[in-house]
Image 1 (cartoon, helix red, strand yellow):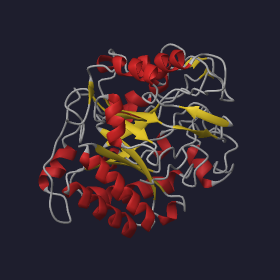
Image 2: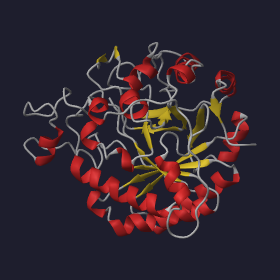
Image 3: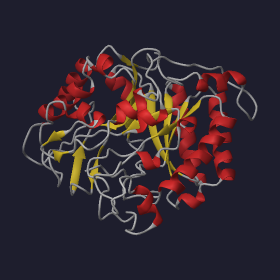
Image 4: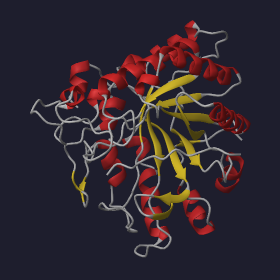
Length: 395
């Protein structure tokens, strides 16, 4: 099948007290499929019940982002020995006719494997194209998939706090667009969850990007959360883009090991504890002191009682790059991501998706092999490291 992968650029809160929310034991709210063009009372109750809409009761879904043009969920399942619970795919918003065909093909593979679909929607034409009518058209399409038995997570306009996408650093327009999509999804679907997924805040505001908010603009004023007259790393990289809990079912973040320091491309073993440090805003290492970054997991997951997804993860290995070896790099990373202690230390972590691609990366100027299952020695180590807290699609 032929699906395009639209490029993700890597990332080089006092909110809790303000909202007055308390943490609860993570659980799961499940709903029956609704019929027709609006959600049933059961679905609305499931979403309102709190933590875990479309989340596992225990542990975390294990999912994958595959190279759809050269791989399949069935082939990946055979290599792994498990069926992934989640399959990651991408589409523009609004979708072209060809992208709708590709999405149908991805949905067919997911349904055949009893997996769920994480659909990342990218409004390349800008946020003005995210109208209420187009949002409802999308929701009706997703409702059809739901009626066919497919659960879906919509990651709308991810990494909106970066500076490299057409929807980036426009906080008010972004929030309004997210809410339009969320209203349609919540009104018209039965088993589709809305996921809010900013970029990791280290390096914010990612100066020099094409879509950085211009100094002196209204967007820059909104992003100046500490009121010092400029947007810097001292400002909150997440809060201005928060749509509100009413509109969000899951929160997510991609957590990669791109190497120790920028520029990327050197084969380097991840520092101990780096995965949790990035997720928790406690990183202070080779790339610098990033302790000013808020604790994403605590403030938007645990405090708000929302399931947390690691939407994509993997460790950089350049086959012709010299330096540390593939097994040393990848095993050091998966040992952190798949740490058996994460089920206790990160109980709101409810989804982990591996980025299973070998592809050219412009930031590196060459091919990066992110995969964990294509070569036998790496696959054996990865499979042996899979912890008991992961949950897969049924056999």
